[in-house]
Each structure stands twice: as structure tokens, then as C-alpha cells.
Image 1 (cartoon, rainbow, N blue to C red):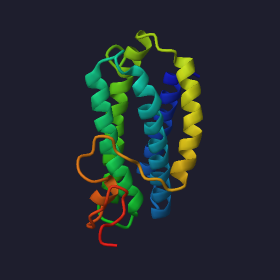
Image 2 (image 1 turned 90 degrees about the horizontal axis):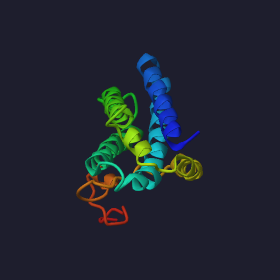
Image 3 (image 1 turned 90 degrees about the vertical axis):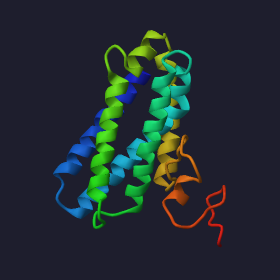
Length: 180
């Protein structure tokens, strides 16, 4: 499976999780599915941002890459909020639904037949097998990191870090509350 096939397989998996979330009726099932979607998305964005996107830089439209990073950061902000919340809270289902819609839009842009990122990357002659090998290795380590509770970090977020944006406490550069 080459890099693009690997990324598309991730897309299909997350779409299935979001569909199951929409059909779920119990709070426990919804939370489990939301957590699974968030984990899969954090791993997926890590391999795209650390391996696939840098390989594409200078070979495909820069605007497309820049927009993808910003879309990822918007998704990561919602992911962190969803992971910090629970189905009992106001807006939980709405946050998962909006995340699903954001990802659907992002996937459409990546997978467009002619102008999409994947089409441009394939036309640029990138070594998709070599990228897939690197992505598989990183995916395994990213899965371990995120299962251990590492939050999704944003690249384009303005201000403090994401954790401080989700709390009322000001944080230092290491994510430690200043008032502690």
C-alpha cells in the first residue's frame, strides 16, 4: 500500500467511525466512538504533517498545503475539546458533528481527482512507497504517544498553547500554569 492509499484508508476508517457515532444512542458508545475518532485523527494528522506534507512542499500548490495545516489545527482544537469533555455536556454531540463535517471537507480537498493534493503529489513524482514506509513507522509511534494521552498540538495557532486556550489559567511556554 503506497502513501496515498494509506491516507485514503485512514479517511475511510474515520468516516465509518463518524457514521457509527451518528447512529449510536448510548452515551458510553458515543464517547468511545468519539475518542476513537480523535485518536485516529491525531495519528493521521501527525503522519501527514511530519512526513507527507513536507515531502509535497515545493512540488504541489503551496496554498493547498497551507490551508491543510490550518484545517488540521482547527480540527485539533475541536479534538482537544471533545477529549476533555463528555456526552453529558452541552455541545458535545455538536462538536463531534462539526469535526466530522470539517474532516469531510478536508478529505474532499485532498482526494479531488485533478486539483486535489493527492493527485498533485502523484503527478509530482514523489516516491509513494518510500513515504509509506516512513509513515507506517511513524504511525506506530504516534499511536503509542496519543494513546498515552498526548494532546493534539497545533502548528498555526496564535497565542499560548492549545491547553491554555482551553482553560482560564495563563500558561508558560511549557504548558505549566503560571499561578502554580
